[in-house]
Length: 443
Image 1 (cartoon, helix red, strand yellow):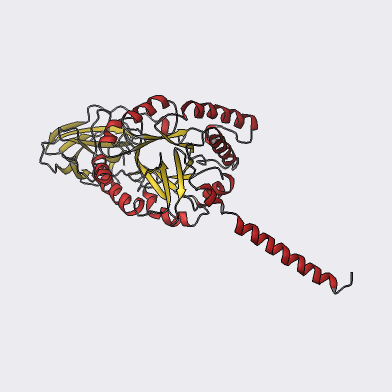
Image 2: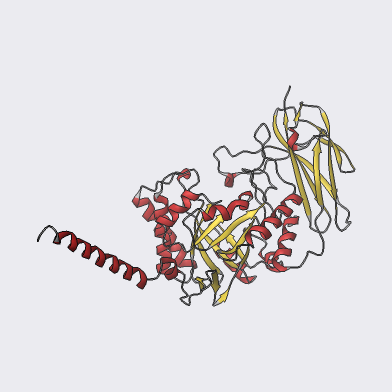
Protein backbone atom coordinates (compact mmCIF):
# COMPACT_ATOMS: atom_id res chain seq x y z
CA UNK A 1 0.00 0.00 0.00
CA UNK A 2 1.42 3.36 -1.00
CA UNK A 3 1.96 6.18 1.44
CA UNK A 4 -0.93 8.28 0.05
CA UNK A 5 -3.37 5.33 0.19
CA UNK A 6 -2.82 4.57 3.90
CA UNK A 7 -4.25 7.88 5.25
CA UNK A 8 -7.21 7.60 2.89
CA UNK A 9 -7.99 4.08 4.16
CA UNK A 10 -7.76 5.21 7.80
CA UNK A 11 -10.12 8.08 7.04
CA UNK A 12 -12.67 5.77 5.44
CA UNK A 13 -12.47 3.35 8.39
CA UNK A 14 -12.95 6.16 10.89
CA UNK A 15 -16.03 7.41 9.01
CA UNK A 16 -17.53 3.93 8.92
CA UNK A 17 -16.90 3.42 12.66
CA UNK A 18 -18.48 6.78 13.45
CA UNK A 19 -21.57 5.98 11.41
CA UNK A 20 -21.83 2.56 13.06
CA UNK A 21 -21.65 4.04 16.55
CA UNK A 22 -24.21 6.68 15.59
CA UNK A 23 -26.58 4.00 14.30
CA UNK A 24 -26.17 1.97 17.50
CA UNK A 25 -26.90 5.05 19.58
CA UNK A 26 -30.00 5.91 17.57
CA UNK A 27 -31.37 2.39 17.61
CA UNK A 28 -31.11 1.92 21.38
CA UNK A 29 -33.07 3.73 24.07
CA UNK A 30 -31.28 5.69 26.82
CA UNK A 31 -30.76 3.68 30.00
CA UNK A 32 -33.34 5.59 32.02
CA UNK A 33 -35.91 5.26 29.23
CA UNK A 34 -35.53 1.48 29.34
CA UNK A 35 -35.56 1.48 33.11
CA UNK A 36 -38.69 3.54 33.58
CA UNK A 37 -40.95 2.09 30.89
CA UNK A 38 -44.27 0.60 32.05
CA UNK A 39 -44.04 -3.16 32.62
CA UNK A 40 -47.46 -3.76 34.26
CA UNK A 41 -45.99 -4.52 37.66
CA UNK A 42 -47.71 -4.05 41.03
CA UNK A 43 -45.56 -1.03 41.81
CA UNK A 44 -43.37 0.69 39.23
CA UNK A 45 -41.93 4.06 38.26
CA UNK A 46 -42.77 5.26 34.76
CA UNK A 47 -41.22 8.15 32.88
CA UNK A 48 -44.08 9.84 31.08
CA UNK A 49 -43.81 11.41 27.63
CA UNK A 50 -43.59 14.87 29.17
CA UNK A 51 -40.53 13.87 31.22
CA UNK A 52 -42.32 13.44 34.56
CA UNK A 53 -41.65 10.43 36.74
CA UNK A 54 -44.80 8.87 38.18
CA UNK A 55 -45.08 6.08 40.73
CA UNK A 56 -47.82 3.63 39.80
CA UNK A 57 -49.45 1.16 42.19
CA UNK A 58 -51.82 -1.41 40.72
CA UNK A 59 -51.96 0.63 37.54
CA UNK A 60 -52.93 3.91 39.25
CA UNK A 61 -50.74 6.98 39.95
CA UNK A 62 -49.63 6.94 43.59
CA UNK A 63 -48.18 10.09 45.17
CA UNK A 64 -46.65 9.35 48.57
CA UNK A 65 -48.16 11.30 51.47
CA UNK A 66 -46.35 9.49 54.22
CA UNK A 67 -44.77 9.46 57.64
CA UNK A 68 -41.74 7.67 59.05
CA UNK A 69 -42.48 5.74 62.22
CA UNK A 70 -43.72 2.56 63.83
CA UNK A 71 -47.01 3.45 65.51
CA UNK A 72 -50.33 5.36 65.26
CA UNK A 73 -51.08 4.13 61.74
CA UNK A 74 -54.83 4.56 62.25
CA UNK A 75 -54.33 8.28 62.84
CA UNK A 76 -52.08 8.59 59.80
CA UNK A 77 -54.85 7.16 57.63
CA UNK A 78 -57.54 9.29 59.30
CA UNK A 79 -55.53 12.46 58.66
CA UNK A 80 -55.02 11.83 54.93
CA UNK A 81 -51.67 10.01 54.84
CA UNK A 82 -51.24 6.95 52.66
CA UNK A 83 -47.84 5.40 53.43
CA UNK A 84 -45.32 4.67 56.19
CA UNK A 85 -41.58 4.28 56.06
CA UNK A 86 -39.48 2.17 58.42
CA UNK A 87 -35.75 1.61 58.27
CA UNK A 88 -35.48 -1.97 59.52
CA UNK A 89 -37.54 -5.17 59.51
CA UNK A 90 -37.37 -6.08 63.22
CA UNK A 91 -41.16 -5.86 63.52
CA UNK A 92 -42.01 -6.11 59.84
CA UNK A 93 -45.00 -8.45 60.02
CA UNK A 94 -46.86 -6.24 62.50
CA UNK A 95 -45.96 -3.09 60.57
CA UNK A 96 -47.16 -4.48 57.25
CA UNK A 97 -50.33 -5.92 58.76
CA UNK A 98 -51.17 -2.70 60.66
CA UNK A 99 -50.52 -0.61 57.58
CA UNK A 100 -52.68 -2.85 55.40
CA UNK A 101 -55.51 -2.80 57.95
CA UNK A 102 -55.50 1.00 57.72
CA UNK A 103 -55.18 1.20 53.94
CA UNK A 104 -51.54 2.29 54.02
CA UNK A 105 -48.48 1.13 52.09
CA UNK A 106 -44.98 0.54 53.47
CA UNK A 107 -41.51 1.46 52.31
CA UNK A 108 -39.78 -1.39 54.11
CA UNK A 109 -36.17 -0.75 55.06
CA UNK A 110 -33.57 -3.49 54.73
CA UNK A 111 -30.99 -2.59 57.33
CA UNK A 112 -27.43 -2.90 56.03
CA UNK A 113 -24.55 -2.65 58.48
CA UNK A 114 -22.42 0.48 58.38
CA UNK A 115 -18.66 0.78 58.55
CA UNK A 116 -18.93 2.73 61.79
CA UNK A 117 -20.63 -0.32 63.30
CA UNK A 118 -17.60 -2.44 62.43
CA UNK A 119 -18.76 -3.98 59.15
CA UNK A 120 -16.00 -4.61 56.60
CA UNK A 121 -17.17 -4.28 53.01
CA UNK A 122 -13.82 -5.63 51.77
CA UNK A 123 -14.77 -8.97 53.32
CA UNK A 124 -16.50 -10.77 50.44
CA UNK A 125 -17.75 -13.62 52.61
CA UNK A 126 -19.32 -11.19 55.09
CA UNK A 127 -20.95 -9.22 52.28
CA UNK A 128 -22.31 -12.41 50.75
CA UNK A 129 -23.67 -13.54 54.11
CA UNK A 130 -25.50 -10.23 54.53
CA UNK A 131 -26.89 -10.54 51.01
CA UNK A 132 -28.25 -14.03 51.72
CA UNK A 133 -29.83 -12.89 54.98
CA UNK A 134 -31.55 -9.98 53.23
CA UNK A 135 -32.74 -12.29 50.48
CA UNK A 136 -34.61 -14.37 53.02
CA UNK A 137 -36.30 -11.21 54.32
CA UNK A 138 -37.32 -10.18 50.81
CA UNK A 139 -38.71 -13.64 50.06
CA UNK A 140 -40.69 -13.55 53.31
CA UNK A 141 -42.45 -10.22 52.74
CA UNK A 142 -42.42 -9.62 48.98
CA UNK A 143 -46.03 -10.70 48.48
CA UNK A 144 -47.54 -8.66 51.31
CA UNK A 145 -50.26 -6.39 49.87
CA UNK A 146 -49.04 -3.35 51.86
CA UNK A 147 -45.50 -3.43 50.46
CA UNK A 148 -44.67 -0.39 48.30
CA UNK A 149 -40.89 -0.50 47.85
CA UNK A 150 -37.65 -1.71 49.40
CA UNK A 151 -35.28 0.66 51.19
CA UNK A 152 -31.78 -0.78 50.73
CA UNK A 153 -29.72 0.61 53.61
CA UNK A 154 -30.08 3.92 55.44
CA UNK A 155 -27.41 6.66 55.21
CA UNK A 156 -24.76 4.00 54.64
CA UNK A 157 -21.93 6.42 53.99
CA UNK A 158 -22.20 7.99 57.47
CA UNK A 159 -18.70 8.08 58.96
CA UNK A 160 -17.53 5.63 56.30
CA UNK A 161 -15.22 5.81 53.30
CA UNK A 162 -15.31 2.41 51.60
CA UNK A 163 -17.06 2.80 48.24
CA UNK A 164 -17.54 -0.96 48.08
CA UNK A 165 -20.60 -0.45 50.26
CA UNK A 166 -22.34 0.76 47.09
CA UNK A 167 -21.36 -2.40 45.23
CA UNK A 168 -23.10 -4.31 48.02
CA UNK A 169 -26.16 -2.07 47.73
CA UNK A 170 -26.33 -2.77 44.02
CA UNK A 171 -26.05 -6.51 44.63
CA UNK A 172 -29.02 -6.34 47.00
CA UNK A 173 -31.01 -4.28 44.49
CA UNK A 174 -30.20 -6.79 41.73
CA UNK A 175 -31.26 -9.64 43.99
CA UNK A 176 -34.56 -7.89 44.69
CA UNK A 177 -35.26 -7.34 40.99
CA UNK A 178 -34.64 -11.03 40.44
CA UNK A 179 -36.87 -12.42 43.20
CA UNK A 180 -39.38 -9.55 43.46
CA UNK A 181 -39.73 -7.59 40.22
CA UNK A 182 -43.02 -6.10 41.47
CA UNK A 183 -41.48 -3.57 43.87
CA UNK A 184 -38.91 -0.81 43.22
CA UNK A 185 -35.65 -0.36 45.12
CA UNK A 186 -34.23 2.74 46.75
CA UNK A 187 -31.42 3.75 49.10
CA UNK A 188 -31.28 6.71 51.45
CA UNK A 189 -28.78 9.58 51.66
CA UNK A 190 -28.68 12.52 54.05
CA UNK A 191 -29.25 15.79 52.19
CA UNK A 192 -27.67 15.59 48.72
CA UNK A 193 -23.92 14.85 49.00
CA UNK A 194 -22.94 15.40 45.35
CA UNK A 195 -19.93 13.07 45.30
CA UNK A 196 -21.79 10.26 47.08
CA UNK A 197 -24.79 10.55 44.79
CA UNK A 198 -22.52 10.40 41.75
CA UNK A 199 -20.89 7.27 43.15
CA UNK A 200 -24.36 5.77 43.61
CA UNK A 201 -25.20 6.58 39.99
CA UNK A 202 -21.99 4.90 38.86
CA UNK A 203 -22.06 1.84 41.11
CA UNK A 204 -25.78 1.21 41.72
CA UNK A 205 -27.54 1.03 38.34
CA UNK A 206 -30.08 -1.42 39.81
CA UNK A 207 -31.58 1.25 42.07
CA UNK A 208 -34.86 2.70 40.81
CA UNK A 209 -35.34 5.62 43.18
CA UNK A 210 -33.11 7.87 45.28
CA UNK A 211 -34.36 8.62 48.81
CA UNK A 212 -33.29 11.83 50.52
CA UNK A 213 -33.44 12.56 54.26
CA UNK A 214 -33.37 16.33 54.57
CA UNK A 215 -34.56 18.82 57.17
CA UNK A 216 -33.09 22.33 57.18
CA UNK A 217 -31.12 21.29 54.09
CA UNK A 218 -34.33 21.06 52.06
CA UNK A 219 -33.96 24.71 51.07
CA UNK A 220 -31.03 23.82 48.76
CA UNK A 221 -32.05 20.27 47.82
CA UNK A 222 -33.16 21.10 44.26
CA UNK A 223 -29.97 23.05 43.53
CA UNK A 224 -27.71 20.34 44.95
CA UNK A 225 -29.55 17.55 43.13
CA UNK A 226 -29.11 19.42 39.84
CA UNK A 227 -25.32 19.27 40.35
CA UNK A 228 -25.36 15.46 40.48
CA UNK A 229 -25.58 12.82 37.77
CA UNK A 230 -28.87 11.53 39.22
CA UNK A 231 -31.64 12.55 36.82
CA UNK A 232 -34.19 9.95 37.89
CA UNK A 233 -37.00 9.97 40.47
CA UNK A 234 -36.55 10.60 44.19
CA UNK A 235 -38.51 10.52 47.44
CA UNK A 236 -37.98 12.87 50.38
CA UNK A 237 -37.75 10.02 52.87
CA UNK A 238 -37.45 12.20 56.00
CA UNK A 239 -38.28 15.87 56.61
CA UNK A 240 -39.62 17.90 59.47
CA UNK A 241 -38.13 20.02 62.24
CA UNK A 242 -34.68 21.54 61.76
CA UNK A 243 -32.09 18.93 62.75
CA UNK A 244 -29.92 19.32 65.84
CA UNK A 245 -26.82 19.07 63.61
CA UNK A 246 -27.89 22.17 61.66
CA UNK A 247 -29.22 24.27 64.56
CA UNK A 248 -27.46 27.07 66.38
CA UNK A 249 -25.29 25.89 69.27
CA UNK A 250 -24.65 27.25 72.71
CA UNK A 251 -21.05 27.85 73.74
CA UNK A 252 -21.05 24.43 75.43
CA UNK A 253 -22.21 22.83 72.14
CA UNK A 254 -25.85 22.22 73.06
CA UNK A 255 -28.11 22.58 69.98
CA UNK A 256 -30.99 25.02 70.35
CA UNK A 257 -34.32 23.35 69.62
CA UNK A 258 -37.28 24.99 67.92
CA UNK A 259 -40.53 25.17 69.86
CA UNK A 260 -43.23 22.80 68.63
CA UNK A 261 -44.99 25.82 67.15
CA UNK A 262 -41.88 26.84 65.20
CA UNK A 263 -41.44 23.26 63.97
CA UNK A 264 -44.99 23.23 62.63
CA UNK A 265 -44.56 26.39 60.59
CA UNK A 266 -41.09 25.31 59.43
CA UNK A 267 -42.50 22.00 58.19
CA UNK A 268 -45.48 23.62 56.47
CA UNK A 269 -43.30 26.05 54.54
CA UNK A 270 -40.77 23.46 53.36
CA UNK A 271 -43.48 21.00 52.31
CA UNK A 272 -45.34 23.60 50.24
CA UNK A 273 -42.35 25.52 48.87
CA UNK A 274 -39.91 22.68 48.23
CA UNK A 275 -41.48 19.22 48.14
CA UNK A 276 -44.71 20.02 46.31
CA UNK A 277 -42.98 22.34 43.84
CA UNK A 278 -41.11 19.51 42.10
CA UNK A 279 -43.67 17.79 39.90
CA UNK A 280 -41.05 16.19 37.63
CA UNK A 281 -38.80 14.00 39.79
CA UNK A 282 -40.35 13.93 43.26
CA UNK A 283 -42.63 10.95 44.00
CA UNK A 284 -43.69 12.16 47.44
CA UNK A 285 -42.37 12.29 50.99
CA UNK A 286 -42.35 10.96 54.56
CA UNK A 287 -42.52 13.36 57.51
CA UNK A 288 -40.34 12.46 60.52
CA UNK A 289 -41.20 11.24 63.10
CA UNK A 290 -44.70 9.81 63.46
CA UNK A 291 -44.48 8.82 67.10
CA UNK A 292 -41.76 9.60 69.62
CA UNK A 293 -38.01 9.18 69.76
CA UNK A 294 -35.25 10.26 72.09
CA UNK A 295 -32.69 11.94 69.86
CA UNK A 296 -30.70 14.70 71.59
CA UNK A 297 -33.95 15.50 73.43
CA UNK A 298 -37.19 13.52 73.90
CA UNK A 299 -39.12 16.21 71.99
CA UNK A 300 -36.87 17.06 69.03
CA UNK A 301 -38.52 14.88 66.38
CA UNK A 302 -41.45 13.44 68.36
CA UNK A 303 -44.76 14.37 66.70
CA UNK A 304 -46.85 12.18 69.02
CA UNK A 305 -45.71 11.37 72.55
CA UNK A 306 -45.98 8.15 74.56
CA UNK A 307 -49.41 9.18 75.86
CA UNK A 308 -50.72 9.72 72.33
CA UNK A 309 -50.77 13.52 72.63
CA UNK A 310 -50.25 15.29 69.30
CA UNK A 311 -48.11 18.31 68.51
CA UNK A 312 -49.04 21.02 66.04
CA UNK A 313 -46.92 19.31 63.36
CA UNK A 314 -49.48 16.50 63.22
CA UNK A 315 -52.23 19.01 62.59
CA UNK A 316 -50.20 20.78 59.90
CA UNK A 317 -49.64 17.51 58.05
CA UNK A 318 -53.36 16.68 58.33
CA UNK A 319 -54.15 20.00 56.67
CA UNK A 320 -51.50 19.52 53.96
CA UNK A 321 -52.51 15.92 53.19
CA UNK A 322 -56.28 16.22 53.34
CA UNK A 323 -57.03 19.92 52.97
CA UNK A 324 -59.00 19.74 56.21
CA UNK A 325 -58.00 21.58 59.37
CA UNK A 326 -57.97 19.85 62.73
CA UNK A 327 -61.15 20.68 64.70
CA UNK A 328 -59.09 21.61 67.78
CA UNK A 329 -55.65 23.21 67.62
CA UNK A 330 -52.62 22.57 69.84
CA UNK A 331 -51.46 25.32 72.20
CA UNK A 332 -48.99 27.84 70.78
CA UNK A 333 -45.69 28.62 72.51
CA UNK A 334 -44.16 31.91 71.40
CA UNK A 335 -41.06 31.82 73.59
CA UNK A 336 -39.38 30.49 76.72
CA UNK A 337 -36.97 32.48 78.89
CA UNK A 338 -34.75 31.69 81.86
CA UNK A 339 -33.19 34.39 84.04
CA UNK A 340 -34.69 36.85 81.55
CA UNK A 341 -32.57 35.31 78.78
CA UNK A 342 -33.36 33.39 75.61
CA UNK A 343 -31.40 30.31 74.57
CA UNK A 344 -29.37 32.36 72.09
CA UNK A 345 -28.17 34.54 75.00
CA UNK A 346 -26.06 31.66 76.40
CA UNK A 347 -27.67 30.95 79.77
CA UNK A 348 -24.98 30.35 82.42
CA UNK A 349 -26.23 29.97 85.99
CA UNK A 350 -24.56 29.47 89.35
CA UNK A 351 -25.17 26.25 91.31
CA UNK A 352 -27.83 26.18 94.05
CA UNK A 353 -29.19 29.62 93.17
CA UNK A 354 -32.77 30.61 92.26
CA UNK A 355 -33.81 32.03 88.88
CA UNK A 356 -37.08 32.91 87.19
CA UNK A 357 -38.35 30.92 84.20
CA UNK A 358 -41.18 32.28 82.06
CA UNK A 359 -43.07 31.42 78.89
CA UNK A 360 -45.52 33.19 76.65
CA UNK A 361 -48.17 30.82 75.31
CA UNK A 362 -51.83 30.70 74.38
CA UNK A 363 -54.46 28.33 72.99
CA UNK A 364 -56.04 29.18 69.61
CA UNK A 365 -59.37 27.68 70.76
CA UNK A 366 -59.20 29.40 74.15
CA UNK A 367 -59.02 26.03 75.89
CA UNK A 368 -57.69 25.94 79.42
CA UNK A 369 -53.96 25.11 79.22
CA UNK A 370 -52.17 23.02 81.84
CA UNK A 371 -48.43 23.65 82.06
CA UNK A 372 -45.82 21.15 83.21
CA UNK A 373 -42.12 21.90 83.73
CA UNK A 374 -39.12 19.65 84.26
CA UNK A 375 -35.32 19.74 84.18
CA UNK A 376 -33.29 17.04 82.43
CA UNK A 377 -29.52 16.69 82.20
CA UNK A 378 -28.16 17.08 78.68
CA UNK A 379 -27.73 13.87 76.67
CA UNK A 380 -24.97 13.18 74.18
CA UNK A 381 -24.25 9.86 72.50
CA UNK A 382 -20.50 9.46 72.89
CA UNK A 383 -20.28 6.97 70.02
CA UNK A 384 -22.46 9.09 67.74
CA UNK A 385 -25.18 6.43 67.71
CA UNK A 386 -28.30 8.46 68.43
CA UNK A 387 -30.44 5.36 67.96
CA UNK A 388 -29.24 4.06 71.33
CA UNK A 389 -30.00 7.17 73.39
CA UNK A 390 -32.25 6.91 76.42
CA UNK A 391 -34.22 9.75 77.95
CA UNK A 392 -32.62 10.72 81.28
CA UNK A 393 -34.62 10.96 84.48
CA UNK A 394 -35.76 14.45 85.52
CA UNK A 395 -33.76 16.16 88.25
CA UNK A 396 -36.10 16.39 91.24
CA UNK A 397 -36.62 19.19 93.76
CA UNK A 398 -35.58 22.11 91.54
CA UNK A 399 -38.89 23.77 90.56
CA UNK A 400 -41.43 25.73 92.63
CA UNK A 401 -43.84 28.68 92.72
CA UNK A 402 -45.73 27.85 89.49
CA UNK A 403 -47.93 30.80 88.54
CA UNK A 404 -49.04 32.46 85.27
CA UNK A 405 -46.70 30.31 83.15
CA UNK A 406 -43.78 31.23 85.40
CA UNK A 407 -41.72 29.31 87.91
CA UNK A 408 -38.73 29.51 90.20
CA UNK A 409 -35.78 27.25 89.31
CA UNK A 410 -33.21 26.36 91.93
CA UNK A 411 -30.18 25.18 89.99
CA UNK A 412 -28.54 21.80 90.72
CA UNK A 413 -25.47 21.56 92.91
CA UNK A 414 -23.66 19.54 90.26
CA UNK A 415 -22.09 21.61 87.51
CA UNK A 416 -22.87 20.74 83.91
CA UNK A 417 -25.34 21.06 81.03
CA UNK A 418 -29.11 20.88 81.58
CA UNK A 419 -32.38 21.83 79.88
CA UNK A 420 -35.57 23.32 81.27
CA UNK A 421 -38.56 21.76 79.48
CA UNK A 422 -42.06 23.15 79.11
CA UNK A 423 -45.11 21.04 78.17
CA UNK A 424 -48.45 22.79 77.52
CA UNK A 425 -51.61 20.63 77.28
CA UNK A 426 -55.11 21.73 76.28
CA UNK A 427 -57.07 18.75 77.66
CA UNK A 428 -57.93 17.57 74.11
CA UNK A 429 -54.88 15.31 73.56
CA UNK A 430 -52.92 18.21 72.06
CA UNK A 431 -49.53 19.28 73.40
CA UNK A 432 -46.98 22.03 72.78
CA UNK A 433 -43.32 21.75 73.81
CA UNK A 434 -40.30 23.97 74.28
CA UNK A 435 -36.98 23.83 76.11
CA UNK A 436 -34.05 26.06 76.91
CA UNK A 437 -30.51 24.76 77.55
CA UNK A 438 -28.53 26.17 80.45
CA UNK A 439 -25.13 25.50 82.01
CA UNK A 440 -24.48 25.40 85.73
CA UNK A 441 -21.01 26.50 86.86
CA UNK A 442 -19.19 28.64 89.40
CA UNK A 443 -18.01 31.69 87.52
